[in-house]
Image (cartoon, rainbow, N blue to C red; front, side, top):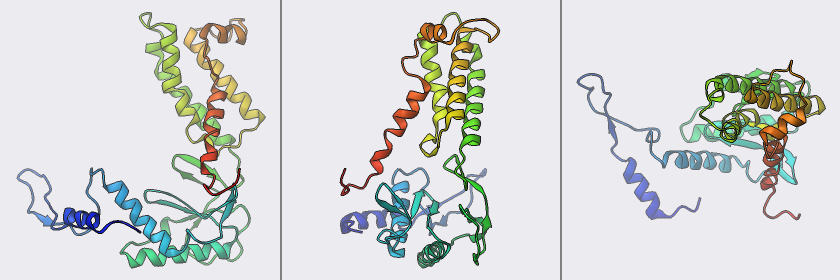
Length: 268
């Protein structure tokens, strides 16, 4: 993988002859550590990523002209630490990917747990012959991915979580010692990020847009202690809070970062 020999030697010496003990009262006897990375070491995430990259390269997935085409680039796997998602356009292609990854894992002492492997298809599965649970949805990095691509339930879930955070801030928002601009900054820093987390994978339709707008106005009304029963226009609420940018603008800012996935050699 192009790693210099001196660096490899340093890492080997760092891990050679490791011992540990469990702190239980007097402590256990010291024992040798033969597997894994050092917990809490800043090198550990990088080393694990290199390990995973080695497996994927040997499996041939990085060079394979297969998978789902996104922005002119073939994507057949998504990885974050030990969470790996394989993507293919057919059952046969997915089976091939899975068996290659399984074989390379076994070569380096890792085991692919088929029982924990979840399979999701946008169409009916006709000839799947590998054990694994077939699901209509699954959670990936905190976001719910569904077979039909419907994000309405996920968006509602995040709006609900945002309401919980906003409610928990009540004691702060009621304080007379905190200025209105500071309270607005708290809402933007603690509530809005909860709502937009994972929004890069969302398909937002008109009903969801209306729900997002309603949630934002609910936040500002709660901040100003203005109930819905009070006849006051939304424009006057926004004018008093002066949010600067709306919650939908946050979505646009996040979505604007997506083009960084465009391959370096692609033409704009």
